[in-house]
Length: 115
Image (tube, rainbow, N blue to C red; front, side, top):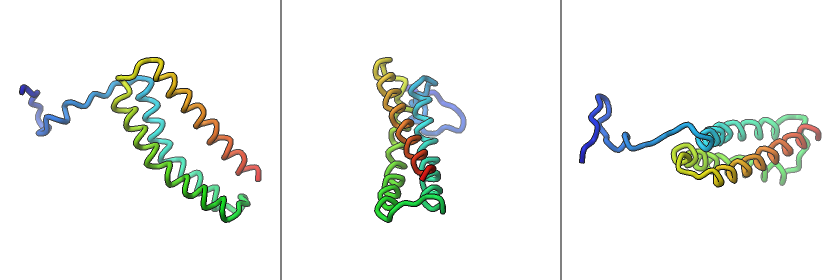
């Protein structure tokens, strides 16, 4: 096999990663940023004195916040590294799913802020 020999890269497998800035790549980056910000926002709302949630609601929101971290990181990584391979219809479907995700997260935060 012929591999490009670059200084500092001893592993030829690293040269096979293809990252191209596309709409899916941007959504993947958004997912990875959301994986970091979502738990921080949820925990700050859960443990603030303004939020009046029952014990069961706090437990469920904590489980959801912890479960969202690996899910968003995996989905974001897949979209970031493999998003350039998607056809436009699939990219539009992923975009619509992200709109639903952002709308439901905004609704949850507005509900908790108004309690």
